[in-house]
Image: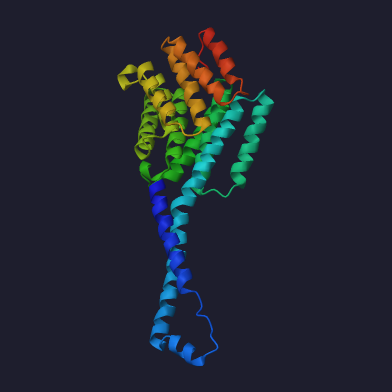
Length: 305
């Protein structure tokens, strides 16, 4: 992507340079004879005017191409990076009141921002997952309602579209919703939600093989999946390790390390678990959640169970 950007930028600069060169006015001299000798013939002048007009059009097209290739994806990625910053604030909030404040503030931010329909749906879906995780079985009815409603919104948006047409963040967010819905139903419905969530994780990672959040969420799916479906601690640990390796931002790295530490705990590898929690804490020295997780691990509890 960077190489492609540089190519477009070089072409853009070249067009700009040529346009400026052709647009420099011919200096006026006191001698009429000299001006007549330097003045181009009418046909040449007309051709030059057309060329200048064409170059201006090309310049505008180059600017439009540059914006369409670079600005939109970068804007979207910035929004998803901002979500991870919000998520970190949730994990490090002091109490329930602070958590609710962060959620309300972030929800207002989503609605006020000039995001596309897909980007807003993506961020709302990611937010729904966090709200569901915080509420959990303590208010099962409310959690189920949140997940069901967001699942329907995603279904509506994706109607008539292939999975690969959506951005990888939406695919993973929707898969997270479905994987949690599977815990509220039984029988064939549970199997259908779990199987569909796996398809969505796979589609997201097909779009971006180095998508840290995709590997992390899929790792969690594998952790809870039965061995017959390819699940288990070893498979989950492998995916979480990919999430750590492919993390780009400090927030991505923090969550990848945090969740991988729990895989190590489940695998009875206390040394590696402790190392991951230390590494996560070093990224954000003011956070205290890793200490809470560590205390729970000492009592044989994983923080997401």
